Length: 142
Image 1 (cartoon, rainbow, N blue to C red):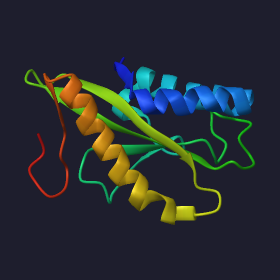
Image 2 (image 1 turned 90 degrees about the horizontal axis):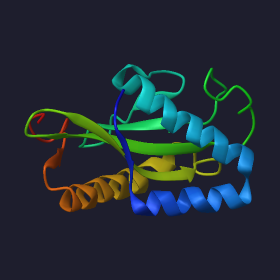
Image 3 (image 1 turned 180 degrees about the vertical axis):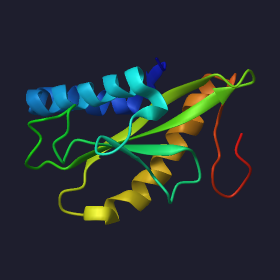
Image 4 (image 1 turned 45 degrees about the horizontal axis):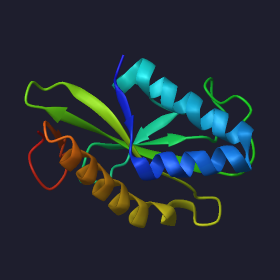
């Protein structure tokens, strides 16, 4: 089990999603629960590392259909970015930073959202000063 924390702005996005499309909201919650249950062992097709990120960032996929989201066969093509952070004792938690629809942008959705997700992880760590982002590019892994 991995502790999962939601950035407040992600929580707001999730609340809006619930109002707009309850079924898709439930699928996103199922993906977040899968992170909590499987942690780093969660992989394709539900989750993949974001290789262009500086931080240890991962993307949850609503589509294509998977064991976690078996009915997610059509748009929206949602991605939910989360990162692992650790404390001085090397305990890791996951921080869910941002979600969005990449249906029209495709992979061009990632650059701005990765930057925003990393900024939100920084904000979360400022509010929880015992934790620091795990850096995987552009510096040593912490």
